[in-house]
Image 1 (cartoon, rainbow, N blue to C red):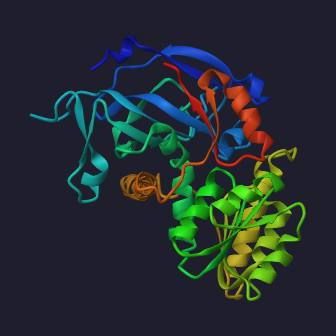
Image 2 (cartoon, one colour; image 1 turned 90 degrees about the vertical axis):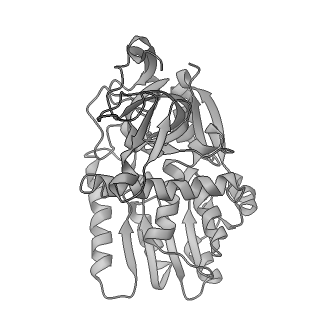
Image 3 (cartoon, rainbow, N blue to C red; image 1 turned 60 degrees about the horizontal axis):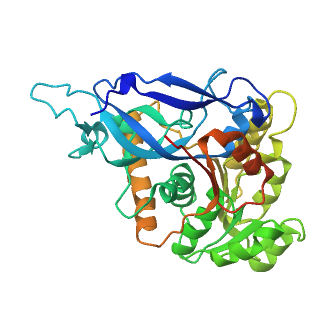
Length: 370
């Protein structure tokens, strides 16, 4: 077990709202892990839409500046806290409490294990100190970069598809941003479930989305609702919309009877000046109205963190289960990791610039060198 207290870690700090170039490296010493904690050496983290909002101060519950971004990570357990009970676990192994709290036998987390974690913030670092209950094992055969593409993105895609919209074999669905980090996994998961997928993308991404198994539609060159009506005259079973704004109305109108709209972002309003919560509140208002209208359709705003505060152990168990399924698909070759670009951790500003430029397929990764 390493002496974590004497091991400095490099982090990327976001000091205030501003351009990506405001990001700056800093060093600090990690505290030694207490009982139930682990030090994880980060192998891969990434840039998500959440960090793009956070740099503008527009993410709903982001911490006060300054802070370290990083929504998720994959890494190797380097140290764990001491045993906490009489005759308890060895110093290099801690039982994960998630399974035990939900009736399972518990899963050991040992030094040398590769694990993944949802962090919301803090992942852009060489090493992090985490609650061991938040660590999800990465199976053998899944490398750190592939696993990183599937943590927040894969978990989001799986839950929206199977828990929220409950897409079934034979359904036709629409995925906006079908080449993005979440969208590219949504396409693959839906195709694997037997659904027909209409993937809405830009011109440069059409061929790649077709390769993933979708019917590709260019949102700039085509009238998307009209094209969807051609493909599904009675409407579609689900629409997955990360764009938000006024365009959400078109997504709602594409649904057939019994269909479900899943909204999971408001990318179109990211740069709108003023109170950052107003666009989201308008979006939530529309969704609430649609939910109560007696029209045979449903609408949801997807929140990956729903239930975390109210039932944390149930939430952790569900994360472990769902992310485990996604990792298994990666391991078995049924799901292909989509990597748009790789950057050293110290080039986080350039990575964010590229991610915000759009037109990419997959996720932009940050790879610590320590």
